Amino acid sequence: MIRIISWNLSYIGEPMKKMETLQSIISKTINSQPYVICLQEVTEKTYSFFSKAKEFNNHIFSLNLREPGITEGQNRKLGCMIIISEELRFDNSFLINRSLFPERALVAEITYKEKPFQVICFHSLTGVGYKKAKSANFATIADYLNSRKGKPTVLCCDLNEPKIDHIDLKRNVYFNQGGDNGKYAELILNPNKIHDLRDSFRLWLEKNEQEFIKVKQRQESSEELEYSPLVLSHKVRKAYSKRYDYILVSPDFRVKSINYDYNTGIDGGSDHAILIGDYELN
Image (cartoon, rainbow, N blue to C red; front, side):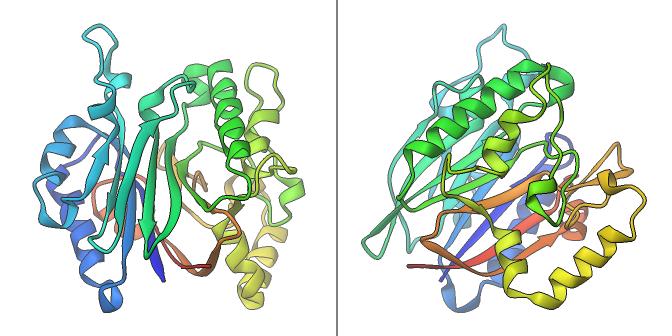
């Protein structure tokens, strides 16, 4: 069993509070269960706090692999961080350099009990700010995931998608970025054989019929599907409910549980839920 935690920390808020929130979650891990933590929107200030904590000694940070240039602005100072417990081993780490913002596409090659797997921590660009660049970035990530078909892989990400998170995946609606009609976001979340990763929460719903029925009934009674996601992970402008955060896994990972802890994420100083998933690695 491996626990995977994914959290968009948000560049605002106090780093100490966020660190203490994660430390509390780790302290409750059962029977010294090994864990992987993927964090997005990690600033250099936040990293300076996290890197000094003993629980986070074993880590990689994307801004150490690509330092922001002096003229690149604040948006190039948001990195990704992957932390692993002592039971796991880092074999390699790198950025997906074909990505438009490589520091937001961090890859770690990890081994657990002689079983190698790969973890990708990815933070999408926003469609509001980047238009066609968001689509181009999705195309690059989809291409990389395609190269991983048949290999144990985990993708922890904030995708800023979809527009409508429907219980029937085929009825998902994605934002139209620069005329792409959501084509490239769909490559990630509705892969159509581009890659073999699947959404942990949807996999969990398939095994939990009562929860599936609850979500389905809630959506059927909703007058605004756009703001009625399968589960809440983020509120746009603190008002409009969305699910933008995901843990996607290859068939090598069997989902035992997945929790979107929105309240703890907000209380911890972010504006995103903390995702906590437990998996068996086949």
